[in-house]
Image (cartoon, helix red, strand yellow):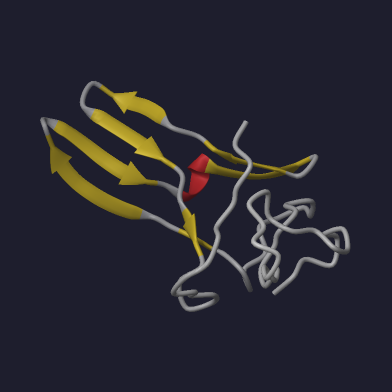
Length: 102
């Protein structure tokens, strides 16, 4: 599941010499690729007097290869954030996982 826009020969910053890239996403299209990612909506319930949610509208794509996951204080006791995952699409059990966070 290599993004065709990933430059050839890219390896993680921590490369053992035996590392093989098997998944990448440059987030440079007009939307999040549904073949790679699921955007999650979930009522996460109450904890410490705060009602927490994952909300689809808190995930924005894609400006210059950047995915935005926005975390907001929606109400006095309500907070929400964005979440994506690869469940049922790509489920590695081990390896090196690398992200760039700005």
